[in-house]
Amino acid sequence: MAAVGVFCASSTRIEQRWLDLATDTGKELAARGHTLISGGGRVGMMGTVAAGARSGGAHTVGVIPQTLVDWEVADTDSDELIVTDGMGSRKNLLIERSDAFITLPGGLGTLDELFEVWTTATLDLHRKPIVLLDPDGFYRPLLSWLSSLAESEFVRPEALSMVTVVDTVPAALDTIEAQLHVDRFNEAVATGDWSSFLALFAPDAVMTFDGPPVGPYEGIDAIAEGYATQPPTDTMTIREVNGKNVDFAWSLGGTGTMTIERRDGLITHLAIAFHSAPA
Image (tube, rainbow, N blue to C red):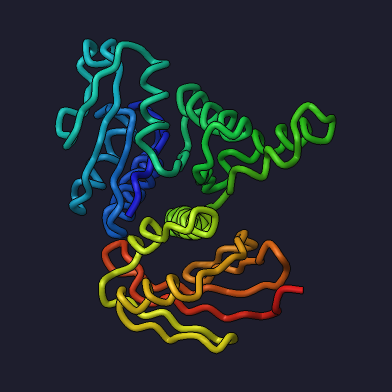
């Protein structure tokens, strides 16, 4: 389970389909057991994403500057409503409280938030997943312009790759969940502390392997013992996410696919198939 920051429009004059998209995003977050971190407004897509999340039982956190509270647009139904002294401190707190970010269609404020988390990621101030949900090519002109900046060397190509572009709500959450899984795995490899990674699993989780002679591990205690007695030393990177299937590559060479089944936001079955071994 993760705290997902969602950036989106607060306009009250947009088409109903964008409000429906925000509602669907909130409901999907709830269905997967995640917490919503929003800009704390009750109008436009910002309000409907929060309402959608709460309708599915999700915990919602709104972060809003006092100025907008004074305008009476605060989402007072939020489980937590945090009032800041300005827009800058609002953005800082949104970044701090979120484990990952989804940007939906929006205007200047949404773009400001997107570029804030994107820029700070390029500076290695955080390593949180950033997903741009681009239904109907809403952001296509922007992405085309950014690509031209890379071609003229105003922007590094690797900076552009820090944002994943998808066109459906499930794909956005699949991408975030896969990246958080890999990030926690890599952190555990580096530190030797597997507690944060193991927290992703349900108590009755099963872990199976197609390749090396280890496992299967049945139950969280068996999975924990497996990592304690045979700790991996190779980190991984994601090559592609396709629903429950995540293609990955090892840092020392070799590739594989993880198939991840979840219930209430926790992994119930992790199946790993190795396609090629490290060199």
